[in-house]
Image 1 (cartoon, helix red, strand yellow):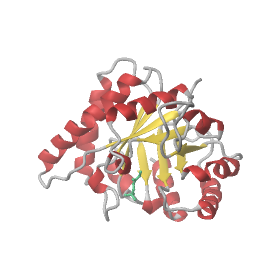
Image 2: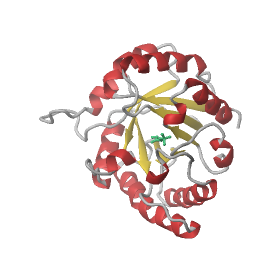
Image 3: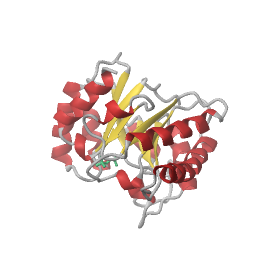
Image 4: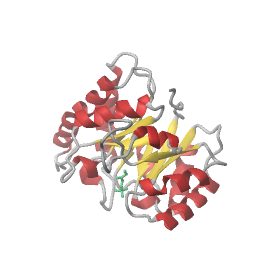
Length: 258
Ligand SMILES: O=C(CO)COP(=O)(O)O
């Protein structure tokens, strides 16, 4: 099953568990009105909670260029896995991407490991969807060069495990989200992000046949963040600061215009 192809740049929002069903449907109705046209080089995506996906898909029927994603999935399509969510069913309900390995799932109590995330990425691709794999270091260092080195050491295996599991021609989106920058007042510094991502991109380039990769930044991203990162990134993955539609629109326009 072929996954959709990736636009040049991407801006997306994760509503985490902040939005209930009525809030999600109202938000998506507003977002569908500000979406870039289908032929835009900037794509947008929305990652709501599982129970909202059916309603979200219905609301997005007139704007299929807005990609719908889930916040997680299981490694298997079906079986005795009570309480888990099948990637096959996510595809059937209208998802075209699945967010995997978010920092909020890599930490306790879930402690999701790289090998499980890689299996999930494979399952997402098997079902014709795009894996949106979050990567990032846990701790912040106040010394710039130390922080960059730490990030590269932690993110490299997170990336490589996924690249080894997924067929070479499958599109993959990586979101570099340092755990310490999520839920903060300000994003990580542009110097830090650009240095880490430059190195991670060269790592991806060493893997033969991996063509369709996009690298986004996430972690307290907001209007203005893109201006500082556009030289080295392919887009942004937003949380709280895009839960206001006007802010989300500002970021979309910034990325669209660049
Ligand atoms: O976790 C995020 C996106 O997945 C970002 O969240 P915040 O922008 O709220 O820090």
